[in-house]
Length: 101
Image (tube, rainbow, N blue to C red; front, side, top):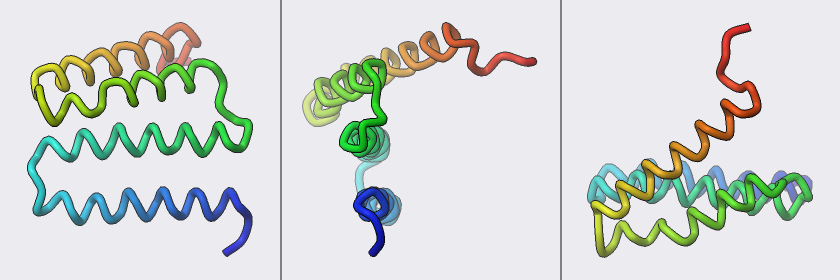
């Protein structure tokens, strides 16, 4: 199937595509869970290829610590997601991302 990286990416795409289909029949909270899980998996692929810096690894660690809150405490999961969004936005703004010009 090509390179090891291509195989890893194809497996991740398989996860995303099957998740999309499964979400038609699953509880709505599984959608956000599957998205952050896919983000974590992507960071792991990047790490294996030597392409993930500390910022991505820290984000992945936060995802892994909080993603299962969806099972026991939906409100805590919502707060966890809000915190992740805030972290990503702040990081992007510090680096000049998403600014005109």
